[in-house]
Length: 159
Length: 291
Image 1 (cartoon, one colour):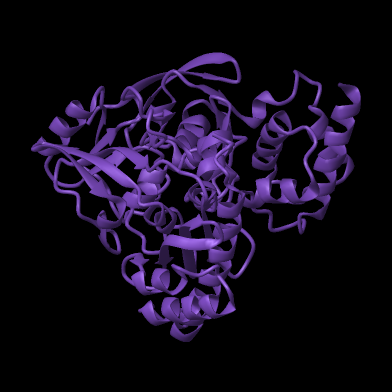
Image 2 (tube, rainbow over the protein chains, first blue to last red):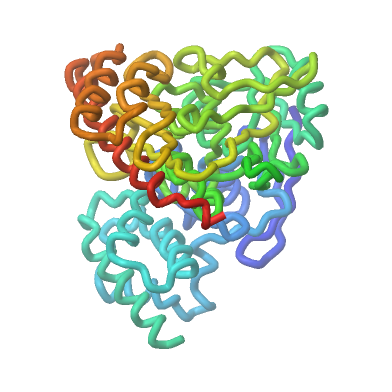
């Protein structure tokens, strides 16, 4: 079986790659496009470390084939900052030390950004349920949740 | 693996009918890709059915029934206010499947065709008396959702056949549904027991009911004795006790690390009572004005 030619848009830039039909979007992002922000934790959709958005919808890129990205809009953690200026969520994660090893952080940032775009004023319970598919084995989640709640409050004040 | 993007259901059927070896249809992919990557099932032919016209649509038919496209993701159902108002049990059951990320991809049809006896959406679909349009090389047929799963990982679909749409009956007034499951934590787990109830009232008396259990037998169970226990009652304590007894009596569960036979059997009765109470409250509140 020959490779499939895929044209897609990642963080606003049109990109092309060739992939094996069995290759996941996560593999394509990391190995073909050198976007290594999305991480492979479990490879089975349980941990959320590979979270990206596809046409605005939060998905695990390990559960999407590279070939399925054809014609889609993909958003990764690399597209969250504005040049050298970090996104408020990224600033707040640093301020709260809402990470230790950092493997889960790109996925949590992508997932949280998607939540705040859908619901700018989430309750703590809503944040915890939304992020139930993003596993963190270091922080115990508390700092992450506090960073998200504080960012949401800041963004509401700013808007 | 040959990856084929189907342009129509006829195209998908033609490719699937001719394919050698293992064929899988790709909609949400949240089971197919996991099995592929774990080397459990490596399809020789993978047919992507998300590009067929209408598969992403949720539509209400003129008779009040609903048609759910086979590539509609769980999140799209949860965001559909009118569907949620009519069939909260079906929508909430689907919403219990996996994480936010999985909800962005996973489909009702996929949850059904994966054939897990613990699938959360299937008891709710059967309680709702949902049906599927199945198309194949020999034409199209309507099949009750209840008759699709035949055992763990197995379905009654023949080679070359696939579901082309799911249908939920018209809600009607004074009726309601609910689904509850037991898991050892609050989110991201597989049902140890699941129970869906769908019922209709005349005044405060139950005139019809469907009680369905998941994860307590090789397939989901539509328990007529449990329905009989509450039909003709106003869901009083005696009816609830009889409902729980009938639900528990129907169980034929496995014994595993996630739940013993005794535990699953007991919890089936508890969940039947709780689901029935929620469905009953929803039926009382359903005066038909929302539609």
